[in-house]
Amino acid sequence: MAILARASMARLVLGIVFLCACISLPFLNIAQKGLLLSSVQPPQPHYEPKRNISLQPSEALAALLSRGGESVPDLFSTTTPSEAVAAAIKDSEHFAQLWWTPPKLCLASSNPSGQPAQFPGNNFCPPVKIEYFKDHTNRFSNANVSEDYWMLDAPALMAIFSARLSPSRWLVNMGSTAHVLGQTAKRTTGGGDICTPLYSMGYHGVNFDVPPHRSEIISFYKRWPRAIVDADGTPAHEIVAKLQHHGVPLDLDFLKIDIDSLECVYLQEIMQAGYKPKLISLELNPAMPPPVEWMRINMSGKCNWPGCSLQMAVSILRPYHYTLFQYPMNDGWFVSDGLLDLLGPLERDTATIYHAGNPNWREEIPGFTKPAYEMRNDLKMLRAFVDKQKGECFQSAFSLLSVANASSH
Image (cartoon, rainbow, N blue to C red; front, side, top):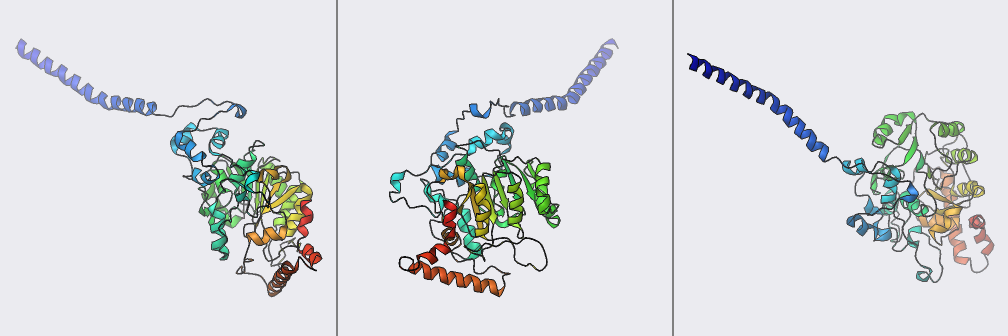
């Protein structure tokens, strides 16, 4: 009996041990998995102030950067960095420093004639080839632009400007609904707009629009935590208060206005309040070519023409020391005069820039009344006539059509 009792006791002990092992095994596995997960977490780097940063890019990145201007579009192979990179690069200054490599201006010897470039991307060696502008213009206006139609986008320009100053990494985007033929975070043609690539580079910004677009823009911009959405339909006289409310600094990097209504009215309000964007992009009505100065001033139902003319925008911005440097299709791009030399020798005549960027006058744009077409066609014929005769007896008339020359002196 004693032997049987001892045997039963032994079996009981073994059973308890086995049961305990079964119960503890899942907890052991969980603990092991926790250790495994923690072991692969990316290290948290120590960041020094921006001026002391010295980055050593990977061999793959260095190979891309060594290609100069041509590499600019390739540096955005994904819309946002991978999770691992996002975890390791929390400092937006590091992110910007890592991915922004300014293209190099061509040496003077490569342009012995000193001819100014009509398309600013061609002032760099190799040329900065942003396909988006060419593709966008061809699709929208059936322009079939020239092979050297290389305009500069916001990331390329901010990379160039960063050689002289520290970017604030702030933008204001007025008219922020993503367009199917806009610029994506990859800097290609697709869903987005010309501000989209900057958000994937760590930018802060305010995206203004109207209430009917609220849910759409909230859905689009939620992927970037620094992108603020304001879809209240802010009137022009309240825009400065809104900028102050959202904490936009006076020295913002990029101001884009594309609202199909009062572009120049909003522009005036912002500039008069002391804001000094380094770069400005304005949608401008192509039906009113240089030298016509024209702008819509209210939203009265009697007014069915949107925006303002390129010449009007040039005149508004001239006292604030901004210069027009490119006009892709119907968007005027202006740079602060203190940064203009970083873009190399450029065409300065407003009419020439207009025709180079919008070669077919965007003939198929809808919504313009008969007088607009008649006036535009008259100006087009007059310009062609004067161009043909400008070396003979029509120099004064040619100067009239090139009044923007005054803005460059």
